[in-house]
Image 1 (cartoon, rainbow, N blue to C red):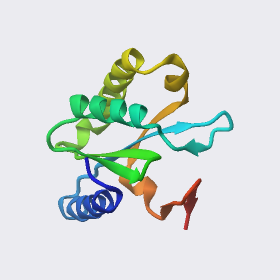
Image 2 (cartoon, rainbow, N blue to C red):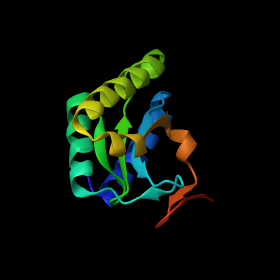
Image 3 (cartoon, rainbow, N blue to C red):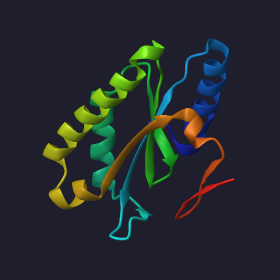
Amino acid sequence: MYNEEAFKYLITKESKRSKRSGYSFNILLIYSTDKHGLIVQMDRDEADTVVSALFRTLRETDYIGWCHEGRIIGGVLTVLEQDSAPEMSVRIQQRLMDILRVEVSVEKISRLQIRICQHRALEGVEFGKDVLTVN
């Protein structure tokens, strides 16, 4: 699993490759929220379980790392064929939820959020200490 700096470098690298090839890629974001919907620090067990589930779910061509250290675990989902992106995203999200429902308490699973979006959706987003802001 990549640290935040290395993960952001990989996103930049994949973005450049995507522009050259004409194929887009997706970003997977997993985070935990409090009762107000704010992103909160993941505890160690929760983060370890999420990372383990990701390694069992994602392909060898995908990357896993901290998008925001301690708060948001990210995945770079490289796209091999453009037409496969939507179905691949649904399949990954469903498989992750199936694994996490078994391995995470009901209380924690209700706070976990899984988002998959095209990388362009995160352009200009800064991951601050407590919130996401758009530049």
